Length: 415
Image (cartoon, rainbow, N blue to C red; front, side):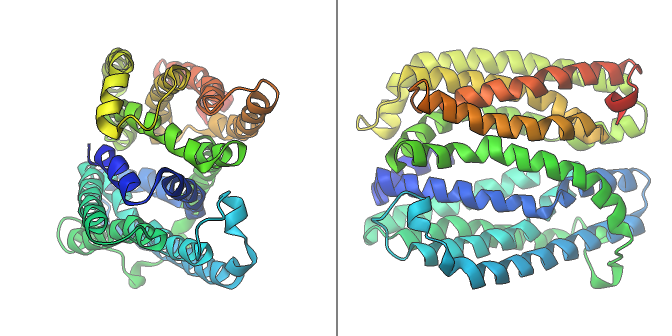
């Protein structure tokens, strides 16, 4: 709900066009998350397994090694961006010539984001300990502090893009850093990262699984982070604002479903490791019930959208019904896919995903381009293209789950 409150407040502080530029920049910077090269997800599975065995020495080796490898990558990337940032014309990329000092702003945001790649590993460790609420707590505190900061800025200062960017990027980093200090000195003391526990050999098993997650992450970024970029290029930054208002409204269902689903990744790892297949089957059925409930809620939200969005944002921005419908379809398919992707990720059976995701990523860009340029479809071309692309994973993920559940998976279906 805080994220919803931030939208009109931020637009009031700046303007729809500048807010659209910020959203597009955030999407581009979000691509940097793939520089964890899949180590985060690989760590989640391997750490869960070692914790089930109560092997805390191995667990600490895994955590320490992952932290130091990602920290090393981050330092190298920051140096590279600092050296070459002046060569990039961000005003052309973001389709905005009205914002000065854009290159400086981008560099600041990138530095904060990259450091957060390191501190965000605390969420991976928390998930392995079955404490997924840690991530939600961080998000809540960060958003609350951002909300207070933007409200104060809107009351006391004029719109400033650099200030906006610092508030949105530095506060989450600070909160994540504080959580690291607190948790590793209390609840996660046994696996606290230390240079003495860095062991490059331990990274091999994390990297082996992580490399497959890395491919999936890249394509996931294409599916989930390119919409704002494509809209800014095909249309304008103000259309990015329109799209994001609609998406944020309906994505309440997606976020709620994600909160329900998140604890299951490590739980599926634990159950599969113990061969508790009946427990897995029962909980997948529960998640499917939640999925049907999410569809019902989306329908209600669509029916109420004209009144709710008008109350939330005002009457200046209108959301076309075609955009609302395609976003609802997209979220429905995404939630279904997430159920089985979560299971397959948890048990490490992701070979099929690594094969189909590059194809899906390329298809998403091409389909978006064709729908806009050849069929003159508006902004809703992006969620429509995403929906078509997600259908591949939605179908194959369900089939693979059934094969694994009934012990009929062989060959690629069991890798």
